[in-house]
Length: 484
Ligand code: GLN
Image 1 (cartoon, rainbow, N blue to C red):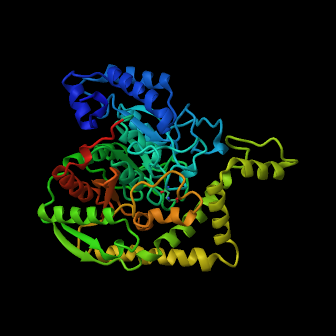
Image 2: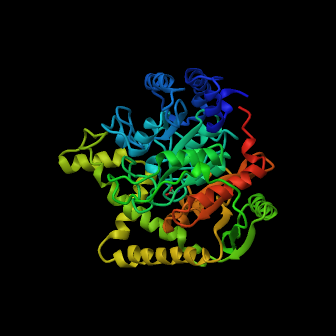
Image 3: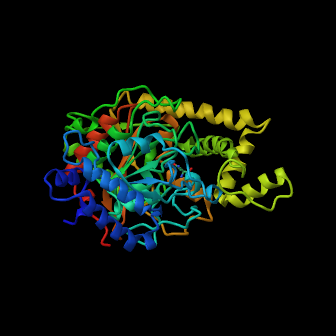
């Protein structure tokens, strides 16, 4: 086995036994990035000096009794998290030249845990998209098929982990941006409960939905990274004051677990191979002793519409701060101050971001507010209520992650509605604030990964992780890697 193929758990073992050193691992990894990244475009920034600095620090700590839990483990982070002294772009021209003076809380926690930050990964501009094609830095490719998208918006993180260019990564999930790319790239992607992970230093898209989470090769590694980044943060007013459980120690087989399967998630137009894989996964779970329960989430059909009203409204307000004065890019051609604002925003934002700002501004405008925003809020409550009712009958919900496997680059770019429908199964959780994980559950005949989702009650990541782990241990999907 090559070092870069190891899981985080395995790499920790190799370090413990003295069979590998962080320096060796980082050398191998950077070589791999040099070879693969020009084509995959998973990273926007790799700062080798900083990587080596952190590696040396890790080497100094490794083996000591108080060595931190991720000592010398190379982790990639989505370029939406602020990194002190390292440019942070959110994949937008408008943040050109922006070097944050502080670390996001999750970055601080990763560093304190001894991780080596390998680089900042590509994404859809301001996390708006499902394919990583709206990035100002060009699209990321899927390591399983270079002419296919990796999903989005955390497509760079997914591609980097699947292509063995990082041992794990952080992403963010507002409507599916961790789980959908994880599914399309054949890795595990965990969106924690809203409030579980601090949003401080995570550039805001839609503040009532945004949540940071983990992208890894195994469920155990997701649990380990979650333990590291979760927890109350006084710097984030929506952060939850809940104890962080030792998730890695709570992965034992969940005996007699009840798994709900929502009829509404098996829709017309869903890819046949995806459907067959999910049904097979359900039977596997049954074989492992789970009780399968049919459930109903009747308001699912409104989720995409509700999400695009709410997320765009919040985005139009959050993105008002990019005016050419405080951060990044400033156009030189405006005639006066207002002209400068307008020209900066016209040139600094890409098409999809402008589409969202216009949609959101319209939805919030006087006279339309209660018809759009107010109504969407009320529908959001109903969607949340559906889940509350369903969790009376089951402990975890099994669903597809994405209705299709990875699609061809360019195939949905000119059809925003088609693109928005990519998130039909992931969005409802964000609206309800629930935790969910996507893990691999098969491959298409063409060799593209298929993902399934496990959804839990609020703050019940431990059940989600233990059911995911039970399935992973019984199936071979997570062991497959792309031949690159
Ligand atoms: N694809 C969805 C969107 O475009 C979700 C994005 C996300 O989760 N950040 O808004």
